[in-house]
Each structure stands twice: as structure tokens, then as C-alpha cells.
Length: 79
Image 1: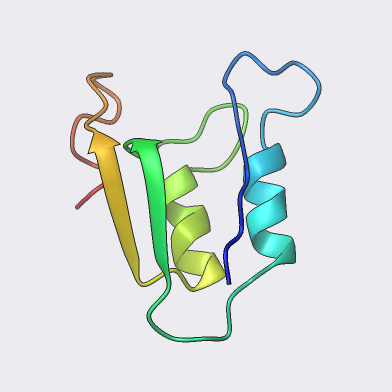
Image 2 (image 1 turned 135 degrees about the vertical axis):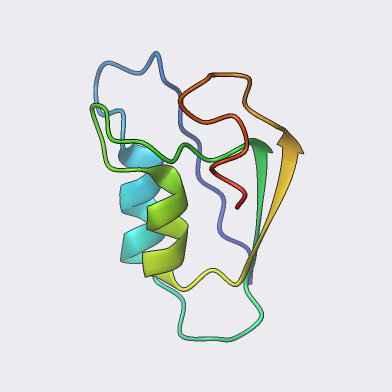
């Protein structure tokens, strides 16, 4: 199965819409891999940390296309 969700930090309607979609489709299967373009955040801001969202949703592995250069993240989202 494939779940596609899109999120944008510039989305004023609901900045956590991608996370909400992930929670609604929480995974009971094993070996779930998420593919993301940018390293998941690991700090609290307008929404909870994306890295925590993956953990709570039961994602086993996250493949990151680009490490976030933001000093608040900078590798913390992949550790």
C-alpha cells in the first residue's frame, strides 16, 4: 500500500495536515518506510515534531532526501 501526503511550511490553512493524514492512516503493519524530501523536524514550533509523528504512527524507517540545515534540526531528525 502507498500513502501519499503533502505538507508545506507555507501552508496557512493547516501546517500539520501531512501529520494528521499519517495519524489517520496509522500503520499496524511492520516494515513501514517513509520517504521524505527534507529531514523531519525534531523541535516544537507551530506543530509537534515531525520525527515524533513518524514514531507514534509506527513508521520503522525514514529515507531522507536532504538533511535539514536549520540549526534547530541539523541531524536531530534522523538520530
